[in-house]
Length: 486
Image (tube, rainbow, N blue to C red; front, side, top):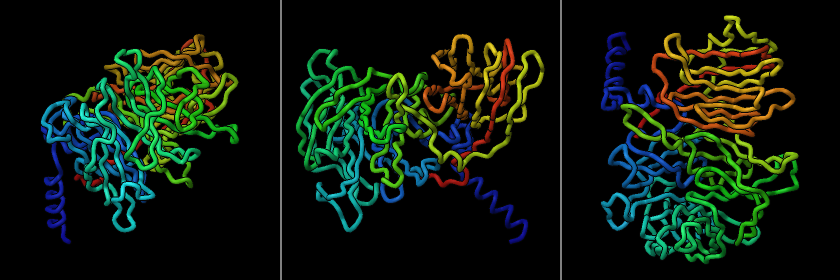
């Protein structure tokens, strides 16, 4: 192919790329996250129907195809083979009863499983049926199924499987298999009485995925429950269950297939302003063994963008026992390593206050991963300024040594040092900051809207010397490069 032909082909490809209303290439816009999932356009909130089948991770989500505001809920759909690169697919679930209302009978949140034993009787050939359990708002708990690996969905002919609750406030079914009782279990947010104080999670069980029997209720929860069994990381002979609330907070305890018995108080899994509707993937292969979670970054702002809403970067969950008791640990999934490129490495260096020696000045950018272990030495406080410039200060991530606290975007939380050291793993995207501290013991997830012209990075200490045991900074590649959009 000669030069002219090549040039014409390049121009044709560029012209064919989708554009937003401001004539920006889709997925390249100024405030478009580059490695956190966003829909191509319009509103997105809760992750739904997370299920793995035949090499594919399915991510469904609350979606308004009519605009950038909440309402008219459908299930949007994306598929990935690595939890990092996503392929958009057509809307999976539509409102029931041909509803055109903003709320009535729209497809609210839920979960999905693989019907390994063909209990629903819909399997075609060797491909297992995927079943989605969802709330049709004010119209009961319902089922949809797919016989072609999630590409097309049909509503179950005998919906609803759980009729409209008399209190009319039941939603967000999470369905799991409970091996000891050999039954399917549904955790459903609902009020057990007319009193708002009765809000919580009801547990149901079923042999056939269609007929559900109420078993028990636990108070003090609101929306989007999740129920997960963990092996204790440093006590391999012990197991513990976690019951998650809509805001990601959790109880640890025991679950016998009918009732949850807490062994801890409620604890936060994330301290940030923008973290909600956590869900974990079902059917992860036993050979993998991970519990993988994602959440909606609620409340983010995306000026002049064609979309509204982003997900957290997927994280791996585990439970570890500490002297104070059991605690959930969250870390970015290892697949992030496939999109990161190291741009700076520092070992065994000291940072001295009052000296103009920014050791990370070469690591500028809007999509970074910053992984470091710091010796507190004589420092009073230290931290980073991200998306910084000479004209406009960036966003501060600050550790106060004297108080033993971490502060990010107006949120201050306790973070005791370990052997006088602090470990930070910071994920910076165009519209979010996620900080995983001390090996995932403490996590802060926030959205932000930085100055577009500011890409600098600053590492500082005040009051005394800070040691850098090890600091690796990576540039994160866009997961949307060279991806087809459907």
